Image 1 (cartoon, rainbow, N blue to C red):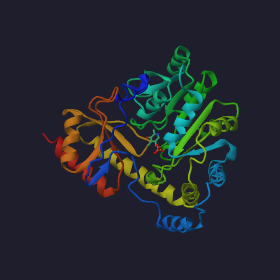
Image 2 (image 1 turned 180 degrees about the vertical axis):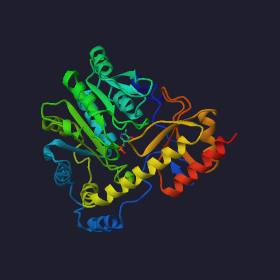
Image 3 (image 1 turned 135 degrees about the vertical axis):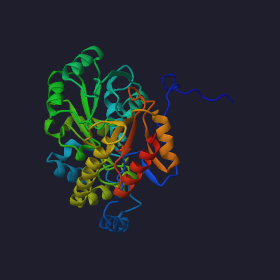
Image 4 (image 1 turned 90 degrees about the horizontal axis):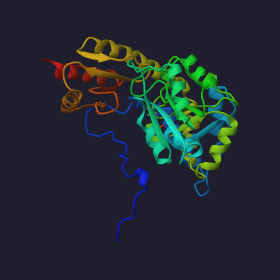
Amino acid sequence: MTRPAVRDDLVALEGYHSPQLDVDVRLNTNESPLPPPPEFVAELREAVGDIRWNRYPDRAATALRKGLAERHGVDPGQVFVANGSNEVLQTVLLTFAGAGRRVLTFEPTYAMHSQIARTSGATVVSRDRLADFSLDASGVLSAMEVADPAVTFLCSPNNPTGMAEPADLIAEVLDHGRGLLVVDEAYGEFAERSAVDLLGEEVPLVVTRTYSKVWSMAAMRLGYMIGPRWLVAELDKVVLPYHLDALKQRAGMLALGHAADMESRVAELVESRRSLVSALSGLDVEVWPSQANFVLFRPRRLPGRDVWQGLVDRSVLVRDCSSWPRLENCLRVTVGSRPENERFLSSLEEVLAP
Ligand SMILES: *Cc1c(COP(=O)(O)O)cnc(C)c1O
């Protein structure tokens, strides 16, 4: 038998790599170091008994969309929910990108934007951010002019740099750009600003959020987006029927009842991020300002890969970004619990010691 051939346009695809090593301190995937409150887990346990397990779930996830819409002050028809925001992005790309269309990204940014665009069949056009990793509206608009993208991604705060896009930049891009603009706000609650205020029925904008980071629910795989009602109706035609199981819909709802806990966990992490940035600034590394729950840094003297390995040898895992576009020697560390941050800092100090 000969093996069936993978699609020609996917042969060179590399897949998503983030090593899952067995270490004491895991600061590589931007998860929350804290679990959701015990009351949430107790409520979820009870919810298991209420579910009619022989029946398909509510296909429209009505209650969850309503709950999310209330949280953001929008209409439930503007909300689309899926298994992680990656599935939200995939559904958007299947609906608006695909073969013969182009998707525009600005590097360095979240690798899954171009990865999912490629699996949708679209052609990815990547432009570089400025030297300090920011963007200027005129650069974004001229890239749009040339590429004529069906979908353009911005990520705010941007993974892996941690920087948020100014609202006036996003507004200008919406006014003068073309195609659909997706603003990935996976870390939105950690930041001082959001593009949610710019949404409108005739504005070609969607904003994505996730339960994976701020809600301490990475294990659940739940994400959502807010956008125009007409656009959500198109996504509903494309996504698989019953894609969101009943327990997950309940979990998403129950979590919203603990928003205050979530916000206090976020506030604590923002505080820890400040301490982490200030401690890093005292070491022999370059540090970028962050509005997220992670910090990008670059050792000045040693190769990034060696520093990463030195940390792994001390049972501390951070993200090695040193082979990513524009990020030579860079590492990204997630803000962990206080003891985890201290262990990371003392290990890093040892590794960097001359
Ligand atoms: C972590 C992350 C996501 C989250 O994806 P989920 O599928 O919701 O876990 C999305 N976008 C960015 C930029 C991220 O860093």
